[in-house]
Length: 434
Ligand SMILES: [Zn+2]
Image (cartoon, rainbow, N blue to C red; front, side, top):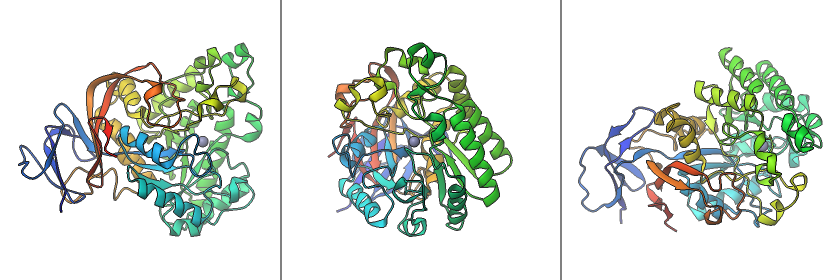
């Protein structure tokens, strides 16, 4: 039996058009018709009046903690949170236990993602075996089963020669990208927050901006040398943003992402020693925050990615210096970015959709299935967003298994109403369908 859905009364925003009023008819996984006043006969109607209809959001950096830390998050709870946040595809980072450095583990995560069926769960593979930074992981083997992003995220690949070889090897793999958690391990050793005025005031050892800047500078030089493709994960400093801007002007194959928190919050948030504001790279100074924001606005930063990093409550209910780094992100990312950038007329809705859908989809190599125009024949991975809806983040009500959201109590503008994955709703009226 064919399944039909009619998304009625919304305005389409995608890579080819902006705020075009049209209904969207979805059948058997595909968009089949787009136009005004479509006939709803035989279709379930999804109300989109007052809403934007866009390609589903794509998050190229999440931690769903499975395998290894299912007490913090699972592929199921993470997928649920992602669907509620409007995401139709995510890329799980490989710092699981065991790490995603061989085909069997990768396959098990992919098949669990398909089984849950709330989001297209893809993975990044390790650059080095066991993320130990000593020898290359089997990049070719991982590439052959669909991996396109390689990273040791959580840790930086510090060895420049190994990084060079990763670029050389991956440049022969079409569409593969080397993604770096850019923090020089020696410079950040023992540090728990951004090194600056606030770390001095609070007496917490710091992680300087230079830790990111020196790695990004080095990696860009290696990418130039090897014609490698390079992506900066969770870029957090004005200095690294400047380096990426110059590299792009030079025509190098360099991209970058930032998180909602790095373009919004600063190290001042750590004032109350609340570990919810601890992450790596850390929340930084106003100068860095403003630099990241500028780079996101001018297109130097291609994508917003959440670095969704759940931690079970008991692991975060410890002194700041003992807490693990990381914050939740997928359920709130769109609303935070929308509140900060679109509701304030800094970016248009289309520019935000670019940074949260089609640009990250292109970086991750799944631009054939996600981030596509809302047009007949395209796979129906879609999100319906009410830009005027206001809501307050309630940490006790998140779908994630963990509660470590830095946005608790925040009023946000813009909310995901429906999400469709492969033509089937995963979220209707802000609730998951299974
Ligand atoms: Zn990272």
